[in-house]
Length: 118
Image 1: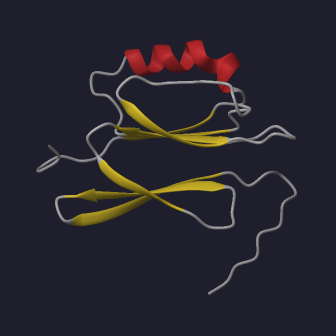
Image 2: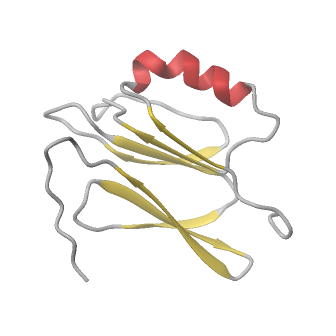
Image 3: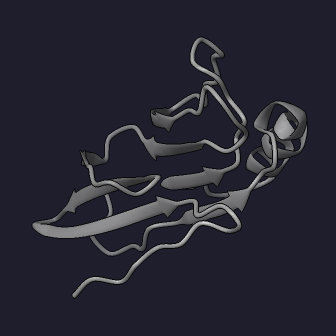
């Protein structure tokens, strides 16, 4: 698997996964090839609210006090680990055929100031 192929990644600011679930599932169902990694922002999911995608592992960052939130789906069978830092993001490190690829799902709300550091 993935010896001579590319990864398929979907990114979508869904502005409420619950409200956009039907559209999301319809889009996923219409694809000839499933996505390997799916990064969604503004899920508005709260802890305890379940959302699954068959055939994918899930990494979530829910907000309890406001809108926002992230979810990243990683196709089962891909070797990955989560990378953490102080930003509102989900970073997964994929290990494929001896190579490493990091996929970063980040949400920066309007008005938030992020300082660059080098």
